[in-house]
Image (cartoon, rainbow, N blue to C red; front, top):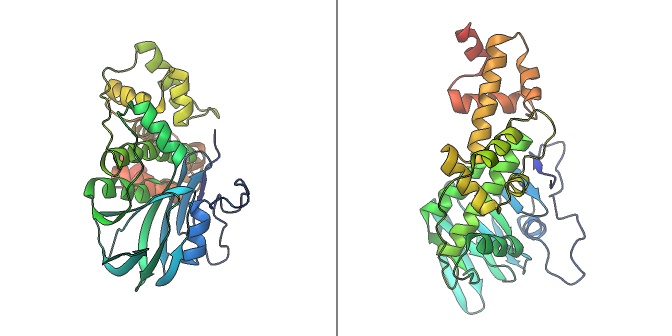
Length: 317
């Protein structure tokens, strides 16, 4: 399984971005998007989750900038969660003036370059999508075509914007959950981009039917495992003998939940059992369920129940 990195910078330690330090491209090749964005934005992302095979999702808060974004190896998809900010984007003779607004999407295709002038501090969520991932999703989805992505600037697309923004709240500090969610989200976003933001919009072939009882049982057994089993989407799909695309849809058809939602519900039930039936401390429960800290576990628990683990335990006893 590709190793996930999820980091929150602090004043004491500003971490390197996950792939910017990796010399995995030949000399003269365009840099990965995380390296170029770090150069342009002159800061570190507030949050970042990445691995080498699926790209990255990053959340930034940066100062005004006036710079050229050079060609990158990855497609960059951006959406804006907060205040509108005036910007100008220039690409050759083309010039776009506008405002960043919630519900809009900006697409920088791999290999393209443009000058950006952003006149105020800006919050932005970015997806870095390797072409290899886009090609794989197109193949697995059985699309009729997989055209190149089209350059977009503050283009109205509330559906894709909401999907990307969901990443900001769904990275919960639990490696297994975060990796599974991010892989699902990346594939879903790639499917959406192929349908709505490609030069020749792709038509995704419908998927019919769920998993067989035997295959579903194996998938659930793996998700329930308390060992260090590989819970990545790629591992679950390979065990079922399906592509990632078809496994996700068949699993949801069979259970009513995506693999990530099923695992999150299972971990919540485990937490409730431990809190109700044992005297195990909250910090130990968090560690047993794979959370990076008691704070991360408490935030995830409260999101699903409306209560902190301690408050829930007192009410149940």
